[in-house]
Image 1 (cartoon, rainbow, N blue to C red):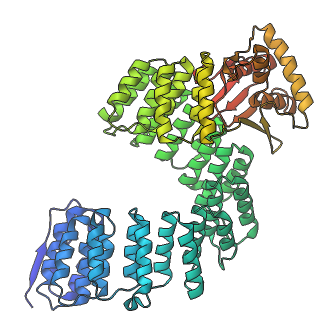
Image 2 (cartoon, one colour; image 1 turned 90 degrees about the vertical axis):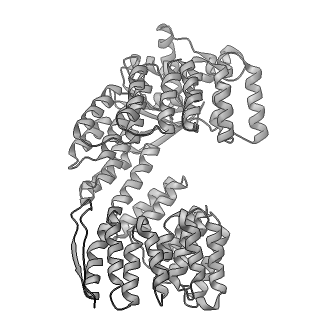
Length: 638
């Protein structure tokens, strides 16, 4: 055999030196080069040289297939793999499968993958799974399902219909959100006994039903699984949370703990903590924290970052700091959680302090980190600081501005009443404004009663999410604040015509591990008489302090006396009054509200905190308000 020596020395990492004279040596060279080429395209010339060296060796389909695998492991050398395939005397199914799979990784090469797939003389389950998965993964799930049906009809595809190809088809039905196709696939695999004992197949069925909105069907499949591992349990718990059925998700999590034999992992805990954060159920989050501390999960950055998020969403920054300082290794997500947590809790100085510490740590910030910093600027009204940070993102760190960065800056400018600058930025920005930007502008218009720009922001939001009642209600509030009650009525009629209903405002407080929920004017609570009596007493003292109800926040064009009565019993005030009578004297009161707190309630709760000498924490849909001694952490700027 012709001796061929080869050495490649221009790679970024120190290159191996090969002397290839036999097939065995070539196999060894491929083994050494494969991980290098996967990691760095600079090794592509080395792979090409190995392919050239193989030309002097006896033909071997196995050797050619290994070279195909090597060349197709990196997009740069993929054309060389296609050239090599055309030179193989007798390519087999493995030859084609290797390239179909490689081409399928990129949507740009999907057509080439399909053309090669159609040329295959024989296809197996790997061939069909690869192409079906590719169409599903690249946004063409209906084409993927059509391919799976074609597979079932082709005589030469016998044996290809197994749990692997069926799982790919189920993933396509899931991506298409097509419950009918998914149910047909379920019936098909049940009749054929495909994957009866395969955990992946069962999990794919659960995922398909859940994501198609058929949660009861998903639960029936889950309950019938012959073997449920931690991945199955975690996925089912998450599906309940995703569907807004947190109570059932928590109950299933507790059932998982009682079952024994299956221990929650970091993803299980992180999912439960996220749900606890969204619902502000701090007691459950603390229990999860306790369990994590007793296991090795407590050392997971992923789970601990979820803990940081949970405590910050519950307004407990002291616990956030304790968790952060106890982490053995702090990563980018953890730093960002700290910065964003302080921003959301109305403590911009602490957010900036942690941002400075983060920069000194040597970890490079990403675009999400800057969203937290810009949010801190927006909530504190630090226009100059915010604009400085905004320009640094591109100028110093080379990070392109995202729609969220622009949304934060528009929030900052509109809150401070600088509408000309805000409008100029919107007109010149390089990316398309998203719903958060327009909602930020609308919020600023609410503060400063800018009707003209409010209409522009609302019209843009109507285009993006026409069914969102918050836009209609905010616009109506702005009209009402300037006395445009005809326009308020017009907004109401549009909502009625479109069947859009306002989300009822609700507030809740956790006392003694029980959550107490209040609606506006609510009289269903067992301690209603005490609550209303306390509010009446407080209103008397508030008037002595000069309080006059701002009835501009009431939409109805009714008598002032009725407006004052309506606003006096908003859900957050009822929750605060209950907190005062149901918690120990001097202890903080923590309230959560599903909508933004109204301006008059904000004023009233400031006075209540002063009169009762109690710290009152209110988390609305936007930020936390920490009321203490008649002052709010948001500086009346929200």
